[in-house]
Amino acid sequence: MKTSQSISQSIRRGLSRKVLCLSLLSAASLGAMTSAYGYDGVETYTAGRHFFKRVVTDTIVHTTRNPNWSQIPFAITSVTLQPGQRALVNVGYSAETRCVSQNAAPEWCELRIMVGGVEANPAASGTATPFAFDSTGNGNETLGSWEGHAVHRHICLYNNTTAVKVYPVSVQWQVTNFGVNPVEFWVDDTALTVEMAQGCTLNNQVPGDPEELQQNR
Image 1 (tube, rainbow, N blue to C red):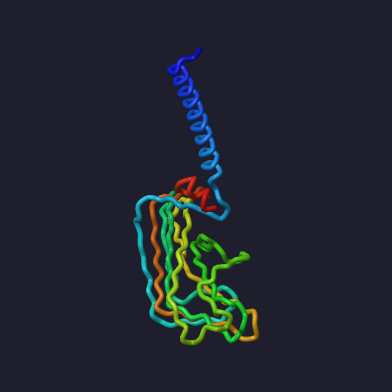
Image 2 (spheres, one colour):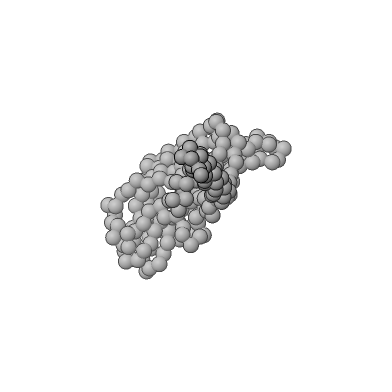
């Protein structure tokens, strides 16, 4: 016959084994979630200290009706890397904008940032979901529809040559044109900001708590 003490000991041993099994299962599940932590389209950039900053401002009004990519006047500069140097380039652009058209259609004004002839990330031009910096509001925006907008883009650069290399940084724009009337993209009071940080690593792993991210997927 088992005494009450032996029964209690058996229960405690059973509970301990269950806790151990649950802990192992939880650890395995967490490891699986962490290893499957990559998301298509998500990129994480990591670098060291910032060592460069340049700002180009412009208070001149510029407009375009061009449905093809072209350079925004004065929204251009450059960065320089020494031989063997790797850096994270962060580019920001802000402007007062207006995007107008008389077409009752979903049209917009696009913008992209180029670094060394390559679109910085997230790169959206030429995709099914391009980046709209402003929109016509189905033709409801007016000549008085001034708004403030901003965009930030990032890219890793690595100078694998034996010579100093200069990379142009520029902001380009274009409009959509789905109707009879042209879309006009208007910008004023712009600021182009370029920063660089030492080194650069890039992956599609999302930093943070795996369980929280899993719940928010």
